Amino acid sequence: MFELLGIPPQALFGQLLLGLINGSFYAILSLGLAIIFGLLNIINFTHGAQYMMGAFVAWMLLNYAGVGYWWALLLAPLVVGAFGVVIERLLISRLYRLDHLYGLLLTFGLALIIQGLFRNQYGVSGLPYGIPPELTGGHNLGFMFLPNYRGWVVVASLVVCLATWFVIEKTKLGAYLRAATENPTLVQAFGINVPRLVTLTYGFGVALAALAGVLAAPIYSVNPNMGADIIIVVFAVVVIGGMGSILGSIVTGFGLGLVEGLTKVFYPEAASTVIFVIMVLVLLVKPAGLFGRNA
Amino acid sequence: MAEAQLAATPSAVAADAPLLKVRGLEAWYGESHVLHGIDFDVAPGEVVTLLGRNGAGKTTTLRSIIGIMQKRRGSIAFDGVETIRLPSRAIARLGIGYCPEERGIFSSLSVHENLLLPPQVKPGGLSVEQIFELFPNLKERLASQGTKLSGGEQQMLAIGRILRTGARLLLLDEPTEGLAPVIVEQIGRTIARLKQEGFTIILVEQNFRFASTVADRHYVVEQGKVVDMIPNAELDANIDKLHAYLGV
Image (cartoon, rainbow over all chains, first blue to last red; front, side):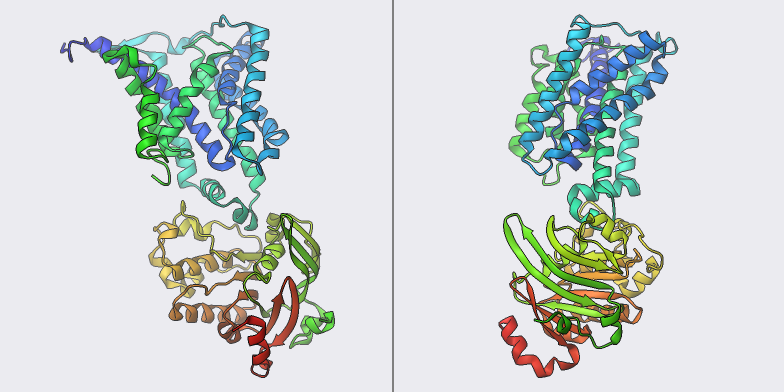
């Protein structure tokens, strides 16, 4: 097999796959954040904790109720999304007339509380969650070995992201969402129940985070800190894509995952910082982000 | 000004059964008290204008009627239903359509999406084809981004989209502002046709010459109060008074 700049193809494509996996999680999480920011103008710092809750709910369903992975894919987002709806109704809805900073502080505080509660109950060493039997094993593609579960995560993430994009860009519900993002007062004056739209949108964004958590559970151990580890990178992805941009979140999420993977191959020392370097460059050149409205 | 005089209309219907009855309407922007007790009636099928100088409270009156002024007090009865405590979405669903001053065209939506955005709140709204008959330009620009239209086309879109909803009372805030004379004429013809079809319209205007071509009556608003009502038929006789009110 060929080598690229002295890198064996297995190493190159292996890292690209890892990058694509990370990119899948970046895309789903940043998509949820973008949807929430777009409509609610809230920078949802609880998103990482809600991603972690998705993984934990899947773990609890399996260990306490014997409910497996496939049902968890459906139930965990519903449970955590419902939790999000309660949070929005009880707490976040009181902050819409205030500066962004209040929403950020509230959601940051909530994230710390949620993580603390899980850490207190389950420790920080991580809990195992097995790959479902249908997705164990892998395929040798010749130039690399593709584990089935990782392939599934990439495909599932793509499908979820594209379906979400379709709903927002091509349906009547999506038109309501986009219009309410621009001018909620006028949309309300047309007879549309914007507060309910806002609540359900927050619940959906949170459910996306939980879905990412369930997908991540068999890959990373289920850990109270798993959300805190990823959320800062995801915020950088959202800023690079353009705050509130749906397409920007998806493209940037997958793209930056790949860039991160390539950096691990060619210059591993920069792998953990390359996304932030790109964020700085993008902010300097296009402050609204690559896909931002004013870009 | 006496309430009875303000409520006077060319037809007996208005005095007996107004579609909209506003009494003692007050409204605030934050701490700023903008409306100080607005009183007026609108009869079914009437076109009524609110005339006045900039900052007199005309737009705020429309915003209060549709319920997007957060702080308001008094009484607004639409078709016998008190709306002062209702949220704007509930008011719209009673059958009131609102076309804001800045037109409110959504840049993230195409012309077609903008047109179909407001839900039908009552039966009897115009079909999309009927709207295209009124505004043929829109049909050719359906796939365009809403805010890529010219000012006149955006105004047509802003009016057209509320005609679909089945609303019986239309609130039009300065629909001719900044438009070329030929477009102003088209808007005027449209309003006249809507009146023929039975729509009730409240028009906020600074251009009283335009208003005189479409309206039945004119309420003059000054410093947050209705200070006069001039039937359109008596406009010529009151032109000096109106000039003084409007500062022209």
